[in-house]
Length: 309
Image 1 (cartoon, rainbow, N blue to C red):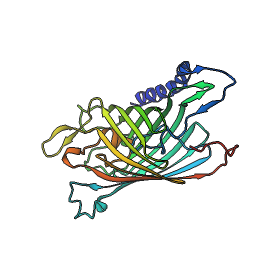
Image 2: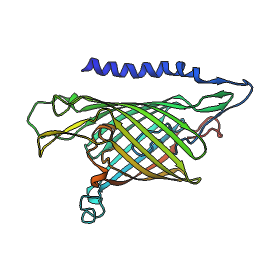
Image 3: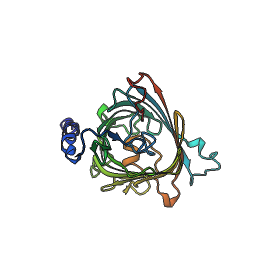
Image 4: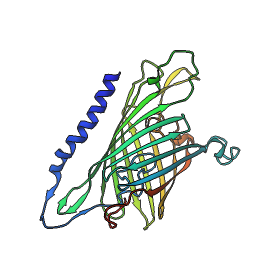
């Protein structure tokens, strides 16, 4: 198991190192005297809804994110006071060490999961002196589930660990439309049955349609290949988890980005929403929620005109 995890980690870092050189072949050299213009605000937040976007805060900027999901619409929504009595939350802090590397920690209430993550820019969309058609970001997280076991079996500390690896490939097509594709691998150290896979491969799609200077419509979909399963206690059979699908509205208010959305994923840690979403839109398993992000400039940039996003 340790060897397998080492190979996964080594593969990600190797790809990060070599992808930049290989993909630089896509860069079209034009007039070297012409200024390179880098694309900004492909997305307004570092997350689309649950999915990572291609954005990271500027160097020296710390970000605090609150993610909140109310109870499901089909779970006695009014009786549970609009889902407030069954709410789940996630808090995270992240900091950009420089313009291309961001690190952070988080905690999710649903499975009492702590996580640590990093996000690194590999390519940045640009035009002018150098033409790069896409932005590319590598992301990885390690997650530690602290939920108490209900069985009497012996467990190792490593049984609680899971890992997420993502490559975010995004493009801002024009001032009002952005789109990204996110190949994803989730590894669970422990699964329920011997027939379940420890590895879940998925392909994410996310987009943003800008309506005004401060408002945008967002959407995302994470396709599992194939679906991860869980043991249904009622029938004692394995049932497929569902693909995560979400729709939202971004509202920018100065230093805040306020994201309202509906989703079938109540969990917010990567292993929960990517591979373990039991909710089904057609059955009413839909959760209202919001994300709020706030940035703080810890270290001022060398040049005041440099963008912070």
